[in-house]
Length: 157
Image (cartoon, rainbow, N blue to C red):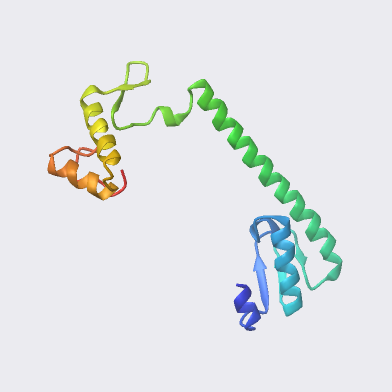
C-alpha cells in the first residue's frame, strides 16, 4: 500500500479502526508519518479520526497504544488458558483423534497397539532420512491405510 501511495495511486486511506491498521504502535506511527510526508490522508472510521486534522495526532497515538495493550492482554489470557487446560488435561487437543491412539471409556487417549506398529515404522523411516513424501509412498506401498482409512496418505503427515 505504501508503494501505491508513493506512486500517487492512492490519496486517501479509509480503514475500519486504528487497531486494524498495523501490528503495534511503532509500526502504525511510522506508517502514518510516511503517509503524512506523502500527503496521504488516513481516516479511521471507528474512532472518527482523520490525519488531515493535526489535532488528532495525539489522540491516534493514545488510542493505538491502548489497542496494542488490549491485544497483548488478550494474547496473554489465551496463552494462560491454553497452559492451564494443558496442565489440567482438559485441553481439547487431548480429546481429538490422534493416529496411534484411541479414546478409552473415559475419553482419554491410550495407545492403539495396531496403529502403534505403524507409528514406530513412520518414526524409523524418518530416522533413516526418508522425506515426508517418501514415508507416505512407503506406507502406501505396504498397504497401510491413512488415519482416515484411505489407501493414499496425505503429503503432510
